[in-house]
Image (cartoon, rainbow, N blue to C red; front, side, top):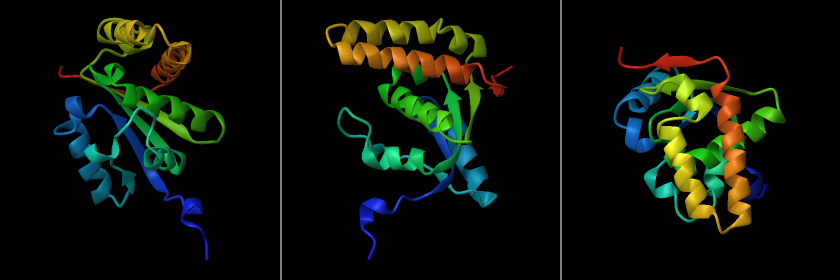
Length: 161
């Protein structure tokens, strides 16, 4: 009998998003559309996120996904959870033939790429909060690198125009 730790559930798509910005709007509709098309997408649960480090279930969902969608919104970079997901997504993309597609929801792609505006403020807060912890400071640098990498990819700009 196989041990449960070796059974990694696989998903067609993992969507990284900031719940407070898009859960009841864009990503809610996105998950419905994916489901209607028979696409198995990982949908996080508010109860899943407990503690400081990335939850094992979330890590397994990312590692077991074939494609990644990142929905960059105004508060995405304020969320350490979103940034941790993004860093793990980048690890997966670097070590396998999987792809990540950025979606810029109600935020200018150049603001995400250059980490200006909302993103600049979010990183200033992370830097201040973690300034005494060398490991956390290094983690923030990994988040910046991952954000720049994904934001430079071709994706969709979805703003209220």
